[in-house]
Length: 303
Image (cartoon, rainbow, N blue to C red; front, side, top):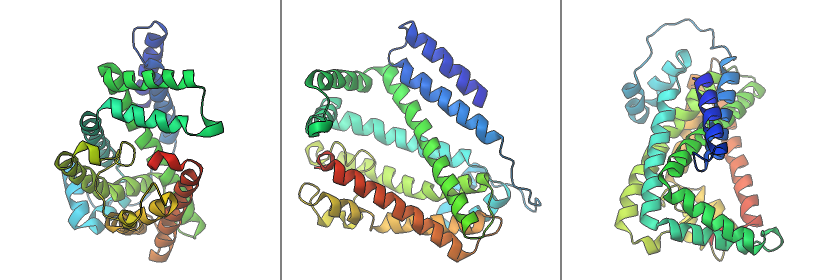
């Protein structure tokens, strides 16, 4: 799979050079990068654990993670298969993203984004570059080939982000004195995120078509329209930092934190509950810090 992705990426890049595939440089580069990362990860061995039970099927794991997560995570400890959760997350994300773009319209999304870029002051590119960006973004959201390329790039981004979180989780467990293989950490990462993504995307789609498009934010609602956190108490225009910090305090946030801690505890070869919770909380705090810094530097994007 890694070699196939890399070769396909090269073909797309060549097609872009020949001007046969619009926007092919980004897509081809993403596929080549995905193939390279996947190849390097295949060099990591699977955990050497006695096989005491058969692996659960995709449907059993995807449904079981909601009502019997302990059984799923224990099975992932022996059989750290992550692809099913990753593909489910990627497909749901693409469905919501496509519906969001159609509902809000590419024109409004691009107009809002480029307007905020123009407000960056010394960080803002020259006006002619902003106009070029607007044309490029509109083309990428309207051209069918480029939209497919955008979907594939988002899938690569989801995988790379998951791999980074899994690596940090693994390092955290090891630092706390536990023992976990990278593939166990990757499986725990994707399956812990799966219920949150399902809730956010499915309910987000319902709300997306119940609310007026004018009441939806072109940037803040790109991931979901579901608002189940304390961010609703603050105006992003008046208190952007408080809004972002409060957004981490909500039902799905705590549910995801609990799933991540439980997943690391049960999927790891050896990790106590305290170690797993320590890593899960540390990752949450790290994301909060990064989000706060970005918001402090560029508050206009969420206003």
